[in-house]
Image (cartoon, rainbow, N blue to C red; front, side, top):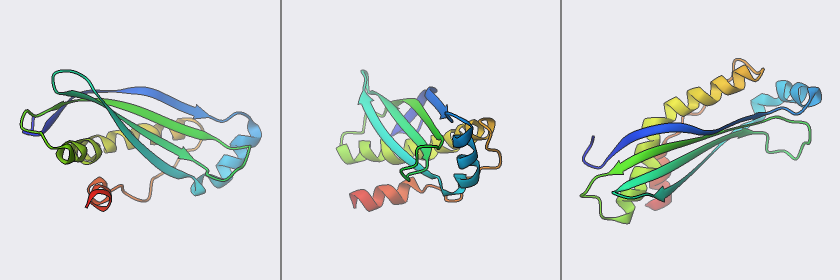
Length: 140
């Protein structure tokens, strides 16, 4: 454990792949390169300096099209916060940056496997997510 935090455990809370019909499948197969990855992070304090951190990845077409597919992963991490962490900004950095940097490669692999097994092989996320940069842009 670093002095700041330790990820005690993690699990897939929700996993979803929705392709309602053949038309949606064909549309998605032709347009999946236009799909975008969205990331949402929220947390809930537990007890004894434990926090539940939920990271949601959504891979979707943002156009208002009826016939399309949708993929979502919600991953829950149970994180123990070090006793010396007192400042809100330090806690935010742990949740939004440090934990994400540690778990994201695993989450990315899970989501890519889901998409591939749902009938869309060969998907790669071209851009790497820089949680440190995103955090610094938002809070500095």
